[in-house]
Length: 119
Image 1 (cartoon, rainbow, N blue to C red):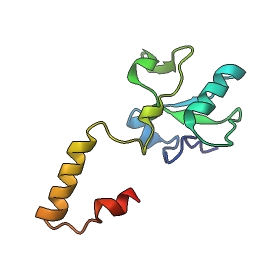
Image 2: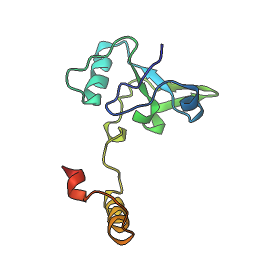
Image 3: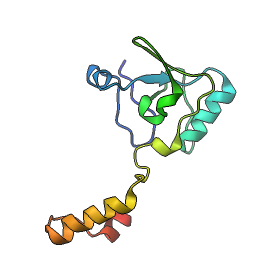
Image 4: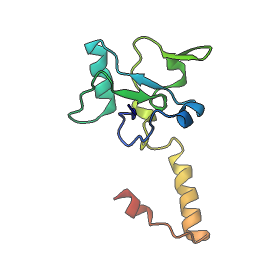
């Protein structure tokens, strides 16, 4: 069975290619309280995880993992980081906007106006 990450807008799936890139997949906790915290962290209205639902390692911070040889495990009690989900604003948003304007206006790349993107 092919497993996809349950995070909104995340297209990672369990594959040899992603494994080679260092992306690991982690099942939702069995403990009901911790599972609920994970579901809330996903910010998906009406979402309920099943026993086979997984999240990829992109939604956790590096220090959330215990790495023992080839085994990668999440530490106990870890909650996914809402700030590392795809679609979150980058940390250097102002710098990215400057680069975008440079490419659009100075280099004349055919890019939509920033207001169009914002809408």
